[in-house]
Length: 194
Image 1 (cartoon, one colour):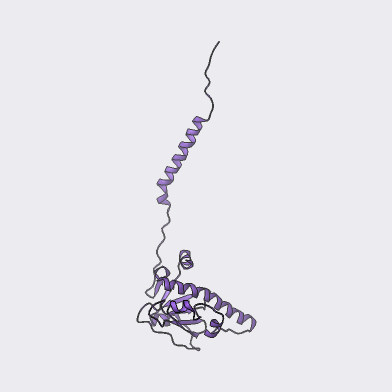
Image 2 (image 1 turned 90 degrees about the vertical axis):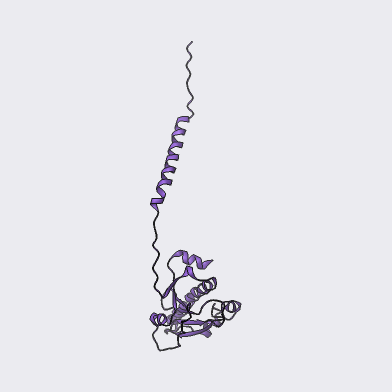
């Protein structure tokens, strides 16, 4: 009688090959990963601009409220154009009647610096801080689909004068010492949500 030993086919060799290939792929990925990163260039800001990431929490809260108010203000203007055939921008009384923050005088208004709001002209609104604490004085320009928000971050900032007939130009704000907020990425928008 002839005896012959036959090794079992349990996939032991194939398993070692598959495991080795997986380890090789992981090592190769680990070595090559730093070379596959995309470098982002920091956006150069002008002297009159500030990134939203550099603002204080009070100012971030004010900006978040102004972004929401901006949408409502534009919707009110759109409604007046569609239904009344007028290019009417809401005044301070209308915004307060709608309980639209930050234009209402509530606890949040007190905490943020008791801003005195004015409708400068068209779609431009100015809030001058009357307390030392809280968010800086602010200007909201709702003329474009994206909000244009300016802060009085320096002591040399002068308030805008209410003028219904004047055409608003950003250069007026720059000359008056205002600082424009730059929203440059989705991470900035997420910072506002928190």
